[in-house]
Amino acid sequence: MALTELLPSPLRRAFVALGFALTALLFLVLALLAWGQARDDLALQAISPALGIPNAFYTLPTPLLALLVAFRALERALGTLRGGA
Image (tube, rainbow, N blue to C red; front, side, top):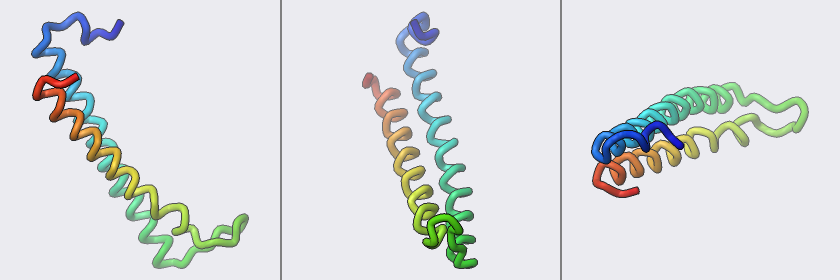
């Protein structure tokens, strides 16, 4: 059983929404840092020694995917505050 199940419904929704909001914040920070890494890989034209392909090939998707997770977490936070599950 989650600790939030012991709380009254409005407070439970607030804590669950806070969890989603903190998750979104974490992934926004990840997106920012990953974009810096991808930008550096593009600027330096770094090549993976093992694969022989540009590092940007596998670092560029990370900021985009992190933004998608952050968006989804914010969506869930708003849905939770509006009374959704």
